[in-house]
Image (cartoon, rainbow, N blue to C red):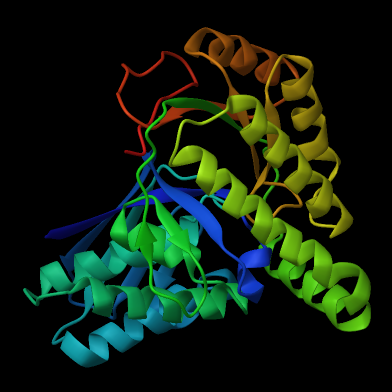
Length: 322
């Protein structure tokens, strides 16, 4: 048996705009991990997960990206049929990069099973191949963050930059419990840009400027109120782009009403998760309780910046991105 692991990711800012060349910031969300086991089998290659168990040939459309990646890897290095068993802790379809994390963990496990070296460059190529099938026109930020497991500044077609956050920031993530419609949301934004470019192209550019402002803050002496203000401005634009929804906006409203400096959706939107910036661990714990009472299905606390803390109990967790 061989295993492969990969962590989730969280987009702080720049989602959707990153598809059109604007920058985004993402961090690995290591509280959520996917692990894959590969074992020998005497039958056809099989795939087992929470959503499907059976022959590779019978995998459902939602897993076509993983299916094609597995077939490509087995064609390249495989010499025998295997059982691929995915064990996941990442909520699917929540904007946390679950599909990229599954792809990375599966690829790592397969290469480990067949005792072949897997470089980051090769892994990134396999994950991107899977993501294109899963999401249609992905930016690539999920794949890069999952593969490198570092905070990244990402601009399409430009060199990747890793980031260092010098001020400790506390964030709270809450899951609406509703799967995000990433592929449809990306396609709909594309149609808006095509049919009404004068209205919507400036919004995409402004999302890029918001990412630049947040980077300036995070790599310097961060002003929490300024970062929060930027997050709120991003959320307003994402609502105009039709990628938010009532489930997200309810939790965002609760966060702002409970003292968050800023709050916005994270990832594809239309369900999935939101992220809020708060000033302290105590405030984060209070906000987790308020979000849970408001109907969030799961909540996490994590930090960005210098220093680490012990994990919180219950449904909240902590993560240090640096």
